[in-house]
Amino acid sequence: MSGPICGNSFSHRATGAGHNLVALVSPSLAFREQVLAMTAEFAQCGGIVCDLQEMCADFAGYVRRLEEMSRGENLRAGWVPFHTYWLLRGGTTIVGRSNLRHNLTPSLEDVGGHIG
Image 1 (cartoon, helix red, strand yellow):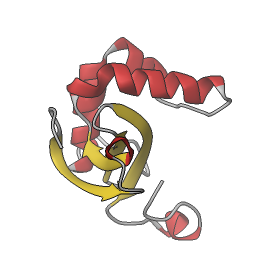
Image 2 (cartoon, one colour):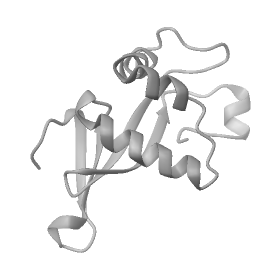
Image 3 (cartoon, helix red, strand yellow):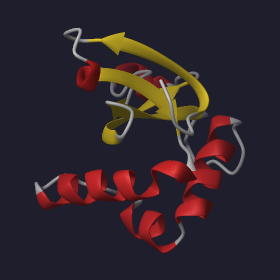
Image 4 (cartoon, helix red, strand yellow):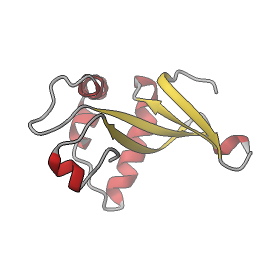
């Protein structure tokens, strides 16, 4: 895998074709345009994007905030630390996002769980 991938990543070859290689990557400024495009498409399809305004206004600050929250810093009330990962396809296209929560509150044990 090439390119400016930050943090931990892993790969899974879905069909053996190089363009189908996918990896979970940590947030990085290098993926700004791809993340904004993916998020805009999701919103146009009716998806709810809570942090779209922040993401568009200050992408570097948004990535910094994700890093802080992964360390348990500056969390919103009732939130638990979590890592955000972006799904990178073919080394160039962000096609998804997932949050992995480090621990759960009683309400997250009922609804939400570790992955969101």
